[in-house]
Amino acid sequence: MSDVTTLVLLRHGETLLTPERRISGSGGSNPGLSPAGRRQARAAADALAHRGAVEAVVTSPMRRCRETAQCVAARLGLSVRIDRDLREADFGAWEGLTFAEVRERYPDDLSAWLASPETPPSGAEETMHQVARRVTAVRDGLLARYAGATVLVVSHVVPLRTLIRLALQAPPHTVFRMEVAAASLSTVTYDEDGTATVQALNDTHHLN
Image 1 (cartoon, rainbow, N blue to C red):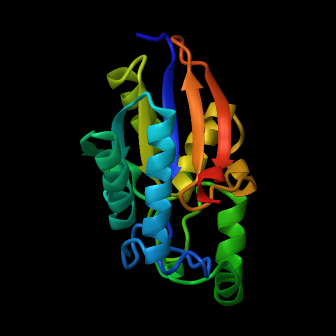
Image 2 (tube, rainbow, N blue to C red):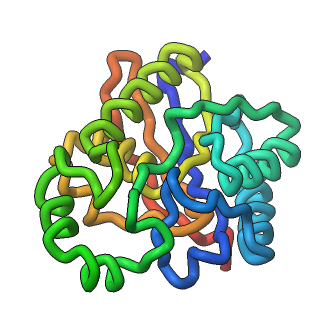
């Protein structure tokens, strides 16, 4: 067994909301994959099968992630474990809107949210700090349960950016400074002492 634990981070494939960049959190319509998203999931599955070494698949319970994870797991011959704390952030009244529409309708709330991880979106109860706290707990649990293994984590923009931010020991606002595209792959490794290294970010070569 390796002394290094690897988390391969896969964002779910596209839904019908993704191309329009509409906000889709845990409090919205819970869409499944679009036809394009299903193609992306199959492409990710092929890339991960070629890569090899993935020993476990853990996913958000949300439909788009479960469908992506099930596609990959079937290709790899693995089962899927669901972790509720990998769900997307709740965006309250912003669900289904673009950020341009949020800026037009809720300008003060948006500014406050961008400025402080302690401020929730309009009508939402969960802050970015609270998301980070549950994602940290997921990470710690995965490192304990799968020490020395390679685990595929299927989740959403905010949780995956948070895992990367935590690996970099970067401040909270940096979650707004990285791209994690639909069906992209990122990789973080953790030494035995927990020291993290970001090995890849937003790899979409398999989608070309």
